[in-house]
Image (cartoon, rainbow, N blue to C red):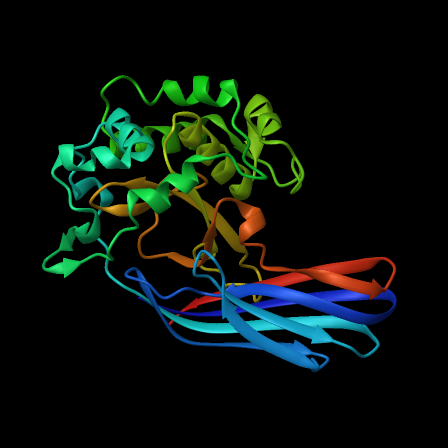
Length: 315
C-alpha cells in the first residue's frame, strides 16, 4: 500500500517573534514495515538555518532557526510512503510466556537458556520475507523503565494482571489488554490534555489515542515488560457516499511490545487492531516526550493560535 501524507502546522502569534528555534519529528521512518520513498519539510518564513539528524531512537529530526521577526510560522511536511506486507501477528509463534520475557529482560545473561543467539535474533515474517534484526534484550530493557509521561503505579499493575494471568503467552495477553482498553474506555477528546496524569485516564476510563497508548505502556512496564510509544498516522475513510474533507485526518499514536526472536509488535488500543496496512510510523520513543512532532523555543510573540491539518491519501 502506498500513501501520500501532508502535515501542515501553523502558529499565529499576537505579537512579533524575534527568534525561534525548533525540532521537528515529522519525517516517517524507513524500516522493515515501510519505506520512505521521499520526504520534504518546508518552513515559512524561510529559516536562517536548517539541518537534519538521527536521534537516539533513530527518528529523523529536522532542526531550524528563524532569526527574523515574524507573526506566523508554517511548517509543512510532505511524504510518500510504501507500506510493506506484514504477517498477521496472530500467525506469529507465541511461545514465550510474559514471565519468560520479563525474566530475559531482567537477566539477559540467561538468554542461552532459551537457545537464542542475541546477534541473530530474526523471525521469518511470511513467505520468505525476513523481519528486521530485532533489538537485543539489552537495548529493549530500557523500555521496561518508567519515563516522563509514563510513571509506574500499582493500579496499572492491577489492571494489567487481569490480562496477564500466570503462564499466558505474551502476544495473547497483549491482545487481551488492547481489547480491554478499547471496550472499557471512552474516546473523549475533551477529557485530557498532554499534562493529564495517566492515573486519571485509568480512573475515569476516558482519553484519546495518546492516553490509551501511555496507559498500555504503563501496564506492560508495571509487569517488567518492554513497551514503547509509536507516533504516526492512520488512514481514515469518509462515510459511504461522502467525499473526504481536506485536512480532516490527524496524527495518531499506539504502542509496541518487545517479543524475543520477533522484535517490536504494534498494537492500536484506540481501534482494537494491530498496525498493519493503514498505520504509518513517524517516530518511536519511551513516550510522547520523545516524539513530539514540533517543539522549540520562541522569543516574544505573546499568545498564539495553533492549527494543524493532516491529509493521508492512498495512492
